[in-house]
Length: 113
Image (tube, rainbow, N blue to C red; front, side, top):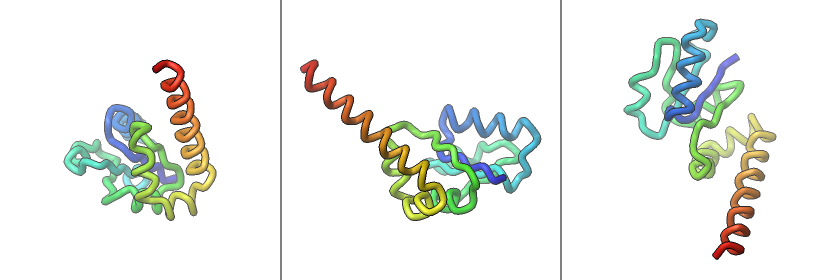
């Protein structure tokens, strides 16, 4: 199984480090992409950098989105076609949860201010 991790910040780095440390992931099966390519130079042995999120989504069997909620739209738009074709349920749930959370935040803000 090819595991993809989009985002190499605190959460993404933790997942990559754990997968790599387990020794159970073959080199070509742990894929990582990040907005800042410089960070990918510090990937541990056993992890491969992808050129972009679209490439990662097209290669991976499962994708962990390790980005801040505000960055989800940009991430999914970049690879929308690939993500929607390969992971339709995930993409739908992400958008539904993000939109619902925004709606709740807006309603709370309207009541509080």
